[in-house]
Length: 264
Ligand SMILES: [Zn+2]
Image (tube, rainbow, N blue to C red):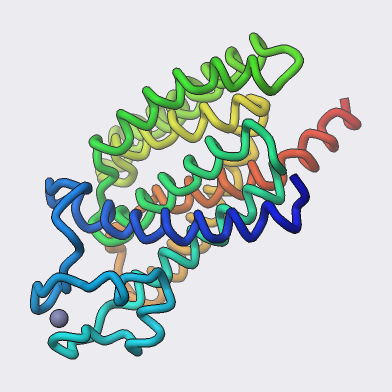
């Protein structure tokens, strides 16, 4: 399939899945079903009509206000939809029309949902991380046999990546709590690292190192900005930076691996 056809299709699916992610972000931490009932206005609880539920477009047409009560609907909703669209298009640019495209696009969407939940509530729900890790471990097996020349290496890489990333963060977490006696990262970050490590390691376990360095740098910069702005050492989530580091590394993985091979 040509890129000219693939990218608009991905953008469309990205929008629709982004709309579903908003449901996941609101309902999973609240312990509610993601399947039904239909979406409601967060203020007046009137059901949202289908014509007012078109991703991004409806929010812009209604100027960010509920049709029933006129209360403003947070810009987070269209932003999540737009971000997911961008992630799916970027996945299309990295993987092209391949077997790997859909699992990586879905993986990016899971990371987006987890990041927004972590930013809002400082949690990474087990209801999302555990099933994601399990499904990923199963999915990499057929994916490797469909996609790469040496499938056993890719499967082994996924396992090594997951164990290495989770292991490193787990040890850091224990050391930090022993030495600093303060809570920093949480177990949720360790589970997230296992998930990230699987999909980084499937491509190449060395990518875990790049993702870790990227996440640490972003985390340090954002942490410093937050400390300056808030003038206090309030807790701030680490999950989003882990996710951004991994997505960035995966999108640039061809260039990174090319450089690695040339240097060896
Ligand atoms: Zn309303």
